[in-house]
Image 1 (cartoon, rainbow, N blue to C red):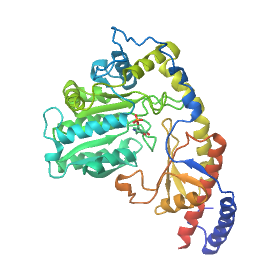
Image 2 (image 1 turned 30 degrees about the vertical axis):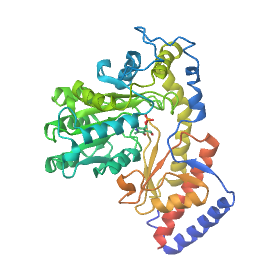
Image 3 (image 1 turned 90 degrees about the vertical axis):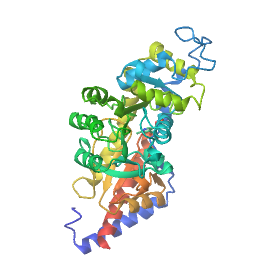
Image 4 (image 1 turned 45 degrees about the horizontal axis):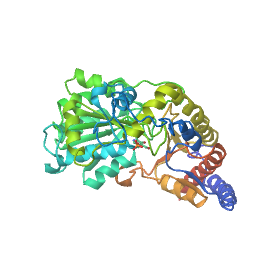
Length: 422
Ligand code: PLP
């Protein structure tokens, strides 16, 4: 039944049926969680050979004793791994600690406190702002919020951010100093940016404030679910447009090896890397090179990055299929929500009818299924349509996910029908 064409009495009857079903489920006292995009234990097990792989041989190529201090930009072999993930030259990569989010935070701080490559520090501007493609990654927005950097929502379509709007804002406001981009299998929409979008982003450096930087968070660079989707090179596009300084690229092995103890990378031009190093050298003597060496050996002695990611995909695919089947079987053709089939990454993005997301999340929570809070995918936690919900299928076992999704679909129906009855 299409919700729009249902009469009031049909809706009331439907609400009664759904409520009875919902109350029955509530009595089961479920305790399920599909909130954060964490790898499952089965995925983490794929990398357990990291433990003990060095067998007492701590020397990297060139003789560096990785146990000791030093090496601010990371081991060459680790930088090579980052270069492979980001498809950039090794000289343009710094291999850091365990988190790319930390590197992004430090990069924003560098721009804010000192300015990149000799440009005005953002803190000296009246109202520095980032453009934020939405729905997006909540932790990007938290960094801006914490530093008092303004945020402007930019809707994302199937090609990436709405570039007409991006260019309009940049032309009209010289204090826009950054944009957050998750260009491949975006969190949460799953969108991969098109050739035209990448080209237009690469041209922004010609019209923006010279201190403007694109934060190219390629967190899902190698996280295909089966069909490989290619992302055009932002590096090549900026080189052609003479805007290479406008981009900072990030990646990590968090969802490749062990999420809490991987290696993170930042890639940029020499001038940008110099600015980052100036900030980093006051903060640390060097990263965890032992872990960097472990990762390098793992991907030369135990497996290749490609084979390893194929094993992740084999574990993840049935979980994504489970989510999509529930949505299709439970909701297709009823005008109760909208979703896409992602080809990679960690999320399925679901849009309820406007004004229903909070109600769905509340109902699911009451029924023992934790969902990412409605609004979390928007700056300041405010989804103007109260519509987007991020579903993260990776962590729970398949049977739990199956139950959680059945509850989710029921809650979408119940919240939508109750809204129509108001
Ligand atoms: N960037 C995006 C888009 C993410 O989705 C995540 C984790 O969910 C991260 C960064 C965190 O990366 P890391 O573990 O390297 O800090």
